[in-house]
Picture: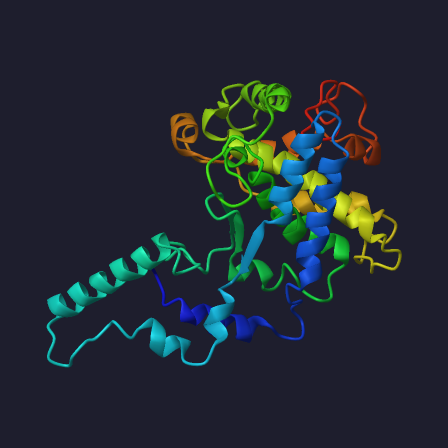
Length: 333
């Protein structure tokens, strides 16, 4: 617990300025609806598989910044009522009391009396999926400028924040998340007839990564530590694109200098820009043993090379690096 959680509520009030778009229900429901469409249109899921996947998605919870109960009057006093320090306490005694308090808070979380994991840093630019709760936690910086600046075109927001939400929704169905049900209990709910096809599609992604010619590390990648993120990246971009298409926005403002570029093509540009990173200085052994995400290059080029809409937008020849002949699909071909 790096900072008092109640600070999160104060920070949220500060950043909710006129220039920042509050994460309204629409920002949550539209990607969910798009993902539900993807599942409904699946070319291989059985009826029971679609029913269970849709149920899990419809019961997916969200936590934006901090729990709603933090806004109640007296919450701050109540949160720290078991922490008693005295002016006469030594440094050792104060730290002992704080550590005891931290343990009490952790136990409250474990026993479901607290909805926010006390070990998470609330001020990381991050979001994450918790399988045991079937919940997506969206950290405060995600909804701060510049991600949701009210002057940005909608496609820019969905290429960044929208793709992040789609990515985290994807984790609910990745090879780890798929083993937890809609109520956050461990259950291998995917029907047996669907599991075989699901495994093949995951293997398509891992094979791609294992054979990827990375600009930093060559053909030395290993998917064993990153396969859940491969799945989330691939499914997340599908959800983001479908969400924007469903909005059917015709009057989205143009970015100066790119007035003639179609909105969906701009989404790809901004998605890549959002994930732009310098060349890696890590050793190959460190990358393979410690990294839990794919390489920076694969998270953009590897993902895009599986999208027919990308190759069409940029006129990539079939069989070229960005329009591979054998593409990997998750739910819809």
